[in-house]
Length: 274
Image (cartoon, rainbow, N blue to C red; front, side):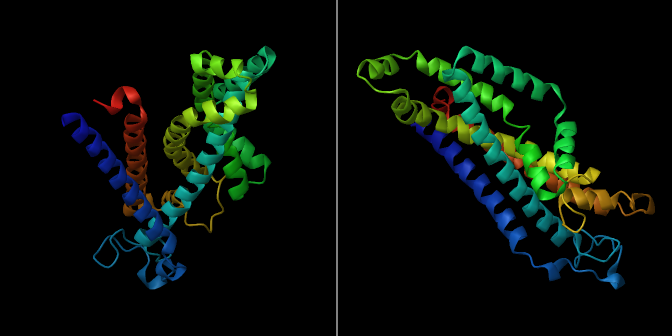
C-alpha cells in the first residue's frame, strides 16, 4: 500500500505541475495586445493594485506583457526542445547501430558542439541565419541534442546485447523491424524526459539571446526583450521592470525542472517503486 501511495503522489504532483504550466501558457497566449498597449499617462508607475508589476517607460502593463512574453518563450522552448530531442534520438540510434566510422564521426561532432559555449554558438547560428525566430529556433535546437544523443547511444548499445534482440534476429527479423518494435518503444521514456529537461535550458537561452539583441525582434514582448529594456531604466529607480519579469522566468524554469525530475522518477523502474 505504501508503494502504491508513493507512486500515486508522484503522478498527482506531475499532473498538477503540468496543469499549472499549461494554465500559465494559455493565459499568456490568450492575452490580447490591447491589454499591454502603450499609455503614456501611466508610464513608469510602481507596482499597485491596478498594475501589480507596475508599468514600463511607455506605460505598458508589465504583468500582462510578462505573461505574454512567457507564452512566447515557452512556445520557442517547446519547439526547440522537440526538434533537439528528435535529432538526439536519430543521431544516437545512428551512432549505436551504424558502422564504426559513423560512431566515431558522430562522437567527434558531439565533442565539437559541447566544446563551444552554447550561448556563443547560438549567437553565431542566429546571426548567420538573419536573427529572428527562425535563427533562434535553429540555433537552440542545433546545440541542445548532444547530451541526450549520448544517452540514447548508450541505451541502444545496451539493448543490442539483450537476449530478445538476438532471438528476433535468429527468427529472421530485419534491423528495421527490430528498431520499430524493440528499440523505439524502449526509448520513448528517455525521449520525453530528455525533452522536458531540455525545455528550461531552451527558455533561458532564448531569453539570454534576445536580451543580447540576437534573438527575437524588439517589438515582440519576450522576456529577454523586457529585461533588456529594463536595463535602461534601473538607474532611475524602476526596479520592478526587471525584478518581477526575472522572478517569473526563474519560477517557470524551476517548475519545468521539477516536472522533468518527477517524470523521470515515474518512468525510471529503479525509482518508480520506492
